[in-house]
Image (cartoon, rainbow, N blue to C red; front, side, top):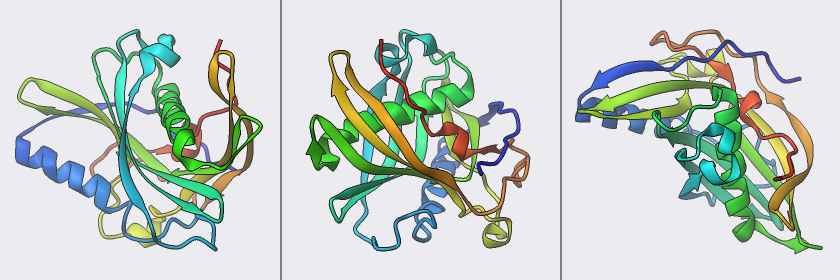
Length: 223
């Protein structure tokens, strides 16, 4: 079963350039420490990093007509299947205005549609068996450098107690993505669940943590 989540809020930190860089490096490094426990057991290594720019104003106008994001992920192909692990998502905090759980879902959905072009194989206009994974505990934080701010969705920071708290547990779902008259859409979702314990409400920095499971996109056809 998927775990419940705390309400999500963005905390604003006026960071210097060095501090912002450290925050970005931390968010990336803890997702690369080990194989995600929700990865397919027959798949090992071979990850490739990729940054996917997405224009959510096109696929999800309810998030703002000018809402843009960058989904930072790693992916691999294994036995004619595809695995995608979401590391960090960067949003424009001014123009991205929908609720935070929807914001995460829409960004991951858009990245999934982009990756469907490279994941394969396809059958009848559909790409099957694409597993999307994300850490089980995620947090929204607003990071400002000078006058420029970025809303970041990144793994919660549990300091040196990563394994004990289960920060490397993860949520996953297997997707079938198809193409139709209105563009790509999610046709089916299977094997969705959480691997590991539920999230604590706060991380060591006092940031609110939410279940990554709630950020995995649902079945939705574009209108």
